[in-house]
Structures are given as C-alpha cells and as structure tokens.
Length: 462
Image (tube, rainbow, N blue to C red; front, side, top):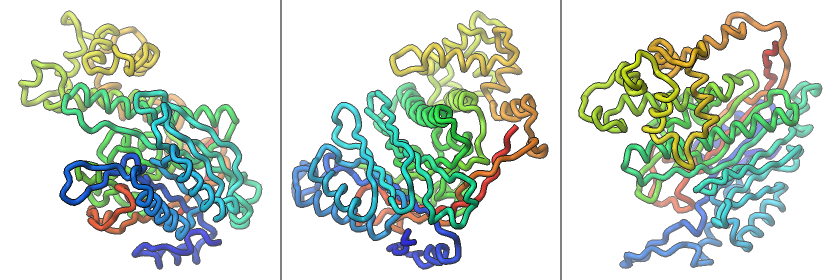
C-alpha cells in the first residue's frame, strides 16, 4: 500500500510488522511545524532574538526538512498547525511537494491576517473527498478549524463489507491558550474560553452530521490542543467518548500523564498538548449540552475546592472547603435553596458571565435547566450535589429515562465502520520518555503519527 512503509522511528520494525499482518491501515500525522514568524533565533553573544522569518535560507531549509520527513513517512492523512500561510513561496513549496507526492491539500489561515494557519492533506489514492468545511471562531485568538469529510477508497473496501459506506470526519485545529496569567479569576476565564472552543468544534461537527443526515461514523480530532491530560479539555473530550490515540496505543491511563511530552514552550516548560482524538460510532455518548454543563459545573467545583483558585475573598482564609461551603456561596438572603438570581451571581463571581466572552444568557439558562432537575425554579441541596457538585451520576439517570443500560441491548443495531488504534509514535523518540532532546530543531513540537485499522463497528439504534 505504501502507507507508512518507511519510517525513522526506533520501533519502526514493529509498526511495519503490524501492517504486514493486518488489513490495509490508515495513518495520520499531526504536527505543529512552528511558523517562522514565531520561531526565535538566538545569536551568540546577543540578547535580542530575531525571528526566523527574517532569514529566508533558515526557514526554507527547515521546511524542506519537514517535508522530507513527511514524505518519507507518507501518512495517509497529514494535519499541520502554524503553517505560514502568509508567505506565498512557502505555500507554493508545500503545494508542489505534497501535490507531486499524490496529496490533495486544504489550507486555512487564521483570521485578521495573523500570518499562520492550518494545512490538511490526504492521499488521493486512498480517499475520496466528500466535503470540506471551515470553522472560524471569531474570537480574540483568531482561531480556526478545518473539517474534512472523506470516503475510504477501494483499497480498504477489499477487506471490509462493500455494503457499508466507509466514511470518516477529520478535524484539524490549533487551540491557543494564554499561559501568562497569575490571577485566579483571569485564569479561570481563560480555561472557560478554551473549553468553549472545543465545545464549538463538537457542536459544529454535530450540526454537520445532522445537516447531511450522516449515520454515526468515526471522527478524528487532530492538532495542537494546548491542554494536557490533567486539564478540562481532556476530561471534556473523554466525557464525549473520545480517546487519545497515543494513550490508547500504549495502554496509558490518567496516572501516566507524566510519561510523554510533545511540546517545549518558549519558557522551556515541557507538556503534552498534541493529540489525535478518536471517536468511534459505538462510543457516541451524552448529549453535547449535558456534557457541556458538566464541564462548566466541574470548573465551579474545582474553583471552590482549591483555596488558591477560589474567587471569594473570605474563603481564601479557610484551609478546608466543602460542598456545603460551595452551596452557601450560591444562596442569597440566607434562603434554604439556590435561586436563579443566586446561580447567576455565582457564575458572575467566577467570571463566567457578565462580559463579552462570557456565557450568553441562553447558555446560562441551559445550565440552570440542567441543574434544576424538577423544574420548580429552585435548587435544593440534593439537586446541588447531584447536578453541580457531583454531576457524573446524571449520565446514569439520563440512561434510565431513555431506557438505555449497558446490560440491556436495544432492539437493533446498525453496522458501520470503526477504527482500531494499532500503534502510535512520537518523534523525536526522547519525548516518549518525557524528555526533550537539545539537538532537535525542526519545531518546538513533536510529530505524532498514529496507525488505524478499519473494522466493522456496531452502533445501537432504538
């Protein structure tokens, strides 16, 4: 097939054996290639740091090397972030070399002429492009995302049921997350904006599926998510049924968050922010609105259980905070229950509403409806515990309402395609051990490549 038949990774032989023993595989590479307009150059004996974009020979040579590696691997799908879309010569370079290698490319610049953007490329031999869409967040970070709807070619159909239409949705994005805030309320506000971006992506994907009347199909979310395994974005995507492909390939759990990194930022800090998330049709989970409310309520819980983050001054002096403390914060006039006005005041104190980037009135009302179980206009202590402090049990309650249980199958199931994670590697290989090699200069991000194997997948339908 020629899909990752060559690779420079230390465990290349095992990956090649996987391909030889298994049906044709899909490979996906995500890579933040560090736009020359952001790459700093250190000159010996000088304090000032120039940008690589001022030195054509430097950025041209580095990007030729990036392309050399990408074409050496020949992944079926390539997703790039910080692509210098504002430079015509570099754009033409990628168009020509990827095009000559059999790829079809889609590019999207960040809004307000930021200079960089995204590139997604797929091999024409293995995919038919069904549709391509662009998502503009229209926010202060000028963030964007690409959605590519592809159908697997005949090479894959030979090993699958030809009656099943084999399609995949691929998303490529780069979420920006400010790291320079030490104020607790500002930091919490930034977390919320980060979550909103992820929510918008999932909402857009969901709307696209409904608009085109698509049956459940695999979804890949690729890119630089600027959120670690300990963060809200990771937990939110997990609540939606997504799995981190790299962690799945290596059987890592949440306790293994320290074992790998993918980025060294300008301060020299190491973190894991580059992911290829996978959602299979049989893992579709909660209604998006429900999981969104849980994420926001989770932010509230975290803010009131960490004295360093708590926004209320009088509680900063307390060594231990409980759920009863949090409940008291949302009450007004010493009432026994939380009213809507008290609820809004709590969100305002957390900086979640009351400004241009905060929750809208409609979103706030949606959260209130999720918390007010019986719809009587107030939230008692029991509802507070179930829906705000510990909302994880709401999934089970919703399942009971819908008559859905893990041990009680529905009346029928629909056969569709799914993807199995076969292997995943990071380059340079040192980052897989949580280290960053000093001689690595291609980018300040590692390159992540994942091998997927198409498989039949059953989706329950009612």
